[in-house]
Amino acid sequence: MGIKGLKNKKWFRIISNKYVLIFLIFLVWMFFFDGNSYLIHRELNQEKNKLQGNKEYFNSEIHGDKSQITTLKDSVALERFAREEYFMKKENEEIYIIEYEDSIPKKDD
Image 1: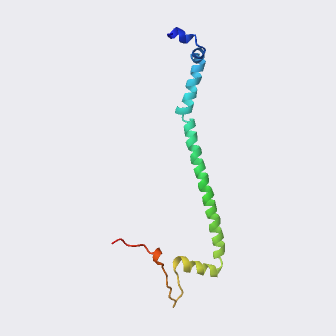
Image 2 (image 1 turned 120 degrees about the vertical axis):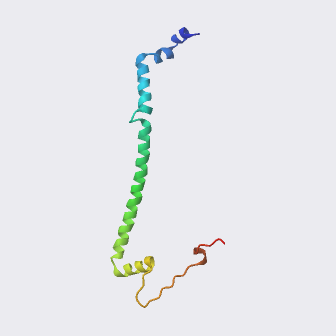
């Protein structure tokens, strides 16, 4: 069945057509090797989806920060925030910080 047997096969005649060969080479080139290949587009789409997720996260953080800013416009709320977050105190006032045993890091001896 040598080369003459292959030339008689229908699939071989179709693939050996010069236009089909050029088209197949073109498809392989565009799919793998070109600067705008499918693989590069897939990576860019994955990065775009990741960045859109980051955008949603940061928008929710901005919304939370804006609501916190509006609550801190009240002087009582601002004082409470400063006392809780930055351990600020009034003059002639003592502050005691209570730490529970499970919140203290253990030292390995």
